Amino acid sequence: MNTNRLSKTIAEALNAQMTKEAHASQIYLSYGAWAESRGFSGISNFFFRHAAEERNHMMKILEYILKRGAIVDVVAIPAPPENPKNINQCFERVFKHEVDNTKSIYAVVKLSLEEEDWATWNFLQWFVKEQIEEETMAMNMLDKMKIAGGEKASDEALLTLDKDLEHTPDDARSAEDVTTAQP
Ligand code: OFO
Figure (cartoon, rainbow, N blue to C red):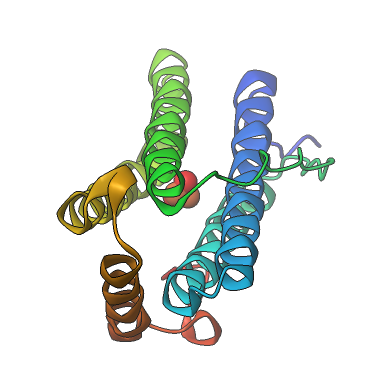
């Protein structure tokens, strides 16, 4: 008896989104390593935490696909882009990555609507909401960067920003405390 509750199209789209979340995790991991190697441990701490959050997003989708009786396809994760040229470019890219991911989630939501797959539509609403937070986080980063002087930010201003980020993420749960249900 076939117990698969996802259509081929939806299963493929969810699998692709799962890989996209894994890719996002790799991107933030690479930015964290890059920032740390340049001495910005606050910024790096922020990115390492965010990398763990993206991995949890990946797991959340993986668990949903399994729960619906479909096949999970674990495939190669594309390499992250080359390192940013500076902190300003790094934060600009973060915003772009997040908007990109939002569009990709919207495309799967649209599919679920077209197929009247209300379970998947409902499942994806968590991601729609989460992306509002993710985009806000990226916008806040860009705002802080603008205040620090943008492309022309002095070492002193960048150091203050770095110190700030060393503490801000401490308000959030650490990677070990999050679960796939509550990334
Ligand atoms: Fe998975 O939320 Fe960012 O990309």
